[in-house]
Image 1 (cartoon, rainbow, N blue to C red):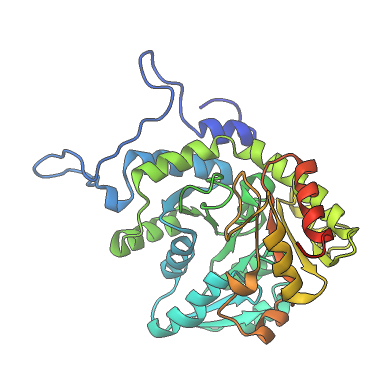
Image 2: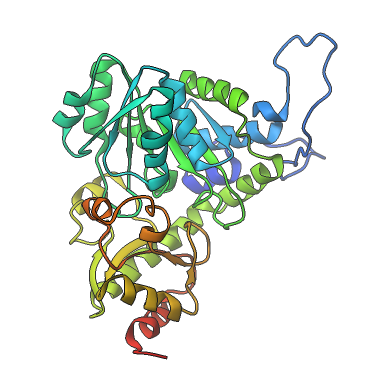
Length: 388
């Protein structure tokens, strides 16, 4: 596709790098709902087989995602956890070591703390904001550094550049989970990362109707992720791939509204007497606000807050909401709310959650694209009413 070295986010989200079609060709990339393809008796090149992740829908979407991230290559998988796990396994194996930020999504922590020790892969957790802690944790067997920014669900915004410097100095890759940002708000590869992973179930899909993951970055590392995909099989179904491609076309428009709603609701919550603390990178009170302004084009649609009165008061609020739905996940067009203590971080003890910044009464609002006045009205009635 023509249009310069870096076309805009909406242009890339709609077109990727696809060239204009010839007369009679479909405007929308077709769905290849097939598990296998005709081939020569003795194939002369790569065998095309959907389980290998090289269905035309996979390849077309990978090219679009690579264009959005500014990556050499990209690959889609069946979930965000699959993307993270295979990114790790593309770099590390038995006897190897990972250095990861202490502030991480609960599902990622489960991989690193529960599953990888069974494979003889150790992980050291560090303060992501301390460059010396990254450097001090590196061992001869360290094969990858990993961090998440912004962090789920506390919305801290660690800077990837210190970790990137340590990674470069030691010749090891840095992997960054940027699910909460999307390539519209933040592109880690521009700040020293070698791979970026996403749970495409969230903002990239955008409609709460599919589960998918993305790995994008250096071509050699993405090729190794594909090798692991062939071995372990977390391939994304062609129809889900087609749906993800369709969702991405409106990504920039949706993110603009998510950003708007996130900022508006965060400011409104700050002024409400039933709310004790609000975490949103766009707020001047956020500890990483200056860094977020420097790194990010927008601050997203997730707002975390603490309801005064603890978990009981928070649950009471959830039960009274009428428009905002109580459900896990985020990034869809509809607004959701959840309590990480009972969802993403339920495997942790209360003390462990508090150490991560998830205190009693902590709720995560994943704001959709509804009219902000309607969201505020729903929150107001849920927070202000006493008992039904």
